[in-house]
Length: 100
Image 1 (cartoon, rainbow, N blue to C red):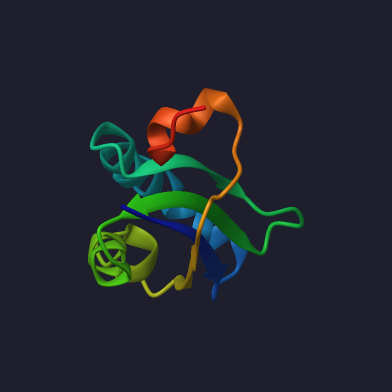
Image 2 (image 1 turned 135 degrees about the vertical axis):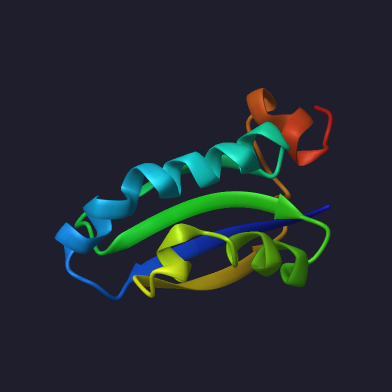
């Protein structure tokens, strides 16, 4: 499994984002249920969001996010950054796939 930081970058005013935020969060719930997502939330200042995710490939991750309402509505674009979590707290070692 590969690990990623997903940066969601808003392309629309915050009122447009707010209009679909519940749909976006419902969409993210699917990723939490299937074990793809570890955490997510808005950036400060609120210019986008950050998601910590895992997937078999960057292409698989991009395919998942292609169904995000933010993308469907043209409100955001995404940057996928793969990283290798060589160190982590034991509380997430099962999610990452390491044992301490």
